[in-house]
Amino acid sequence: MNHARGTRGARGAAPRHDDRRRSFPQVAPRSAPDGRFAATWWGNAWVAALEDTALDPARLARGKAYAGRGHVDAITVTPGRVVAYVHGSRPRPYRTEIRMRTLGDDGWERFLDEAAARPDHIAALLDKDVPHALEAVTGLLPAPGDLVPDCSCPDDGYPCKHAAALCYQAARLLDEDPFVLFLMRGRGEQELLAELTRRNAAQAAAETGAAAPPMPTVPARIALGAATGAGLPPLPPELPVPDRPGRPAVFPPDPDAPDPLALDLLATEAAARAHAFLATGHDPVAALTPWQDAVRLAAAHPGSGLTASSRALYRDLAYALDRTPTDLARAVAAWRQGGAAGLAVLEEPWDPPAGPFDRARPALLAADFPALRPWRNRLSGESLQLRLGRDGLWYGYESDAGREDWWPRGAPDPDPVGALTDLLGR
Image 1: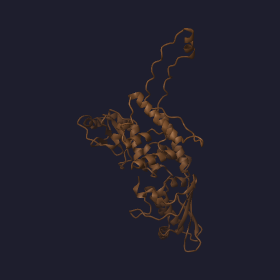
Image 2 (image 1 turned 45 degrees about the horizontal axis):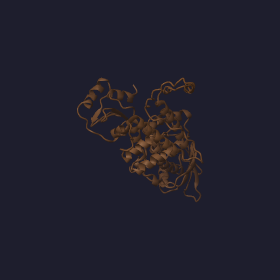
Image 3 (image 1 turned 180 degrees about the horizontal axis):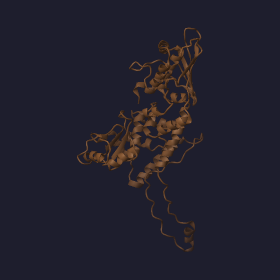
Image 4 (image 1 turned 90 degrees about the vertical axis):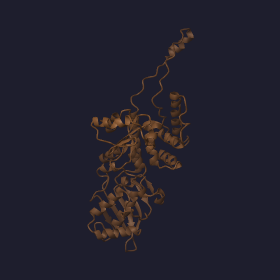
């Protein structure tokens, strides 16, 4: 979680909004610890676009002072526009707005493709953080000249101090909730989450592979023929245990029916435990810690936190165990990668004995992979990492370059070359 933004409790009253219009009460001013007005990298990109466009540094300084003294009233954000009344030297406040271009359909496709490509990107957005990888989406972040100020005051500065004050306070809104930036560029939060949900479901369906072969059956005419003395054929062989539990049905909302999320969780839980009984003959839940069971439960839930109800599930499970939703999302990715063994690889570094770990680096170098730094059971590069599990499998991890923010990715492999090949998509 981005600690520079503080806790959610510091945000004040929740904004009143529909998906394409959000109105925020007067925002209390605050500077980042390093003296900058914004606290996040995307908030500072907004401030930089303002300051690089301004023709008069003195007006900027007065606008920052106005923002610091609370001269900006409630702010309304709609696609392409930020509007507020700003108090100046006269009794009546001035109507001030900032206009900008909205992002086109092609730009939003690139944004959604990038955001849905990795579970850590989705988790970051749900935690009100913007992955640096999304910085590459052209037109998402403001550039010099993107912000066009307008004010009812007589000052013809570009921008005037009232528009500058609004820009500085808008940066605070972006710090607290990056979906405000996305709304400025043309898409509402619920619209984006619905599209991410669709893409996530499509990706999950693709990962299930080809359809299973048809089940063996006994035709009804043969079964009914037993009444005439023809006898029954032998029973078909037992069905093989599937690789994974089946997905539950979709439960549409109905005011007269139970909560769809509760039904979904019950069906998913029943399918997972039934599958475990078929495959192993014992209950996999009995020996789990509360944290492991919370991770297992969240991992079994389709949707990965993308809907309002499943976001609430992640939040409630995480906070009940003194963790953050990001902690839970990362643990869910590890569980889906390798179950309890995958979660242990995420959370428990260990010192492997001489043998497979020592042979991994020469094998990777012989396969023309770049050298990786060893530490305990981990081999790390700039953005890719391999971890050796106690089960003898290699688990792939990925991070934005230089961030040391590792997320599980890919399937475990007994061969480090195979695991790294899977990460790189060779």
